[in-house]
Image 1 (cartoon, one colour):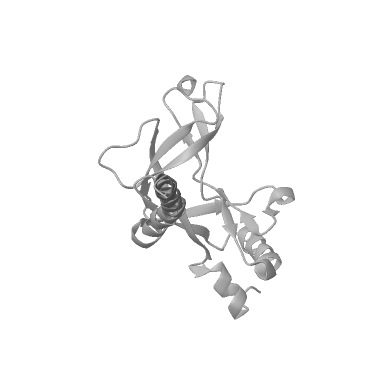
Image 2: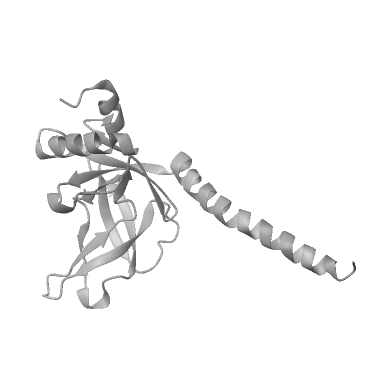
Length: 191
């Protein structure tokens, strides 16, 4: 019986670790969702051939390309820290992009460099960690159609509401003229 005690302790430790890791991940995302500063990101249309995969709507952001001082310092696939500010209408604007986490700032998030110009234009295109808006399966087709209809009409303001805190980003909702996409579906105002 004495030999079983270390195995029992190891089993309990392993069980605690298995619970801690996913709960900690959920806690971090919920903290950002509840207490993170909200930013509105304008959405741009993307190629309609690849705009809806499975149960989510693919989002492309207007504010995803940035000029850098030296394109040679960047490579596609690396992590970039995006420091944000807002424009006069309250929409997110990239203040700066760096390879190092901004010190003393909370209004930044981690993105991935998707493209680096190699022609001297010093341009980076970023891939955001919040580029998929997941929907319930039975609402997905209707949401997709409404989203594209409203996005094509330039009189509509279509944007994503994203919570940002200390490098983490959580997509909260997709809104059309300030109304959540799902509410438009429920209220039948998608016409």
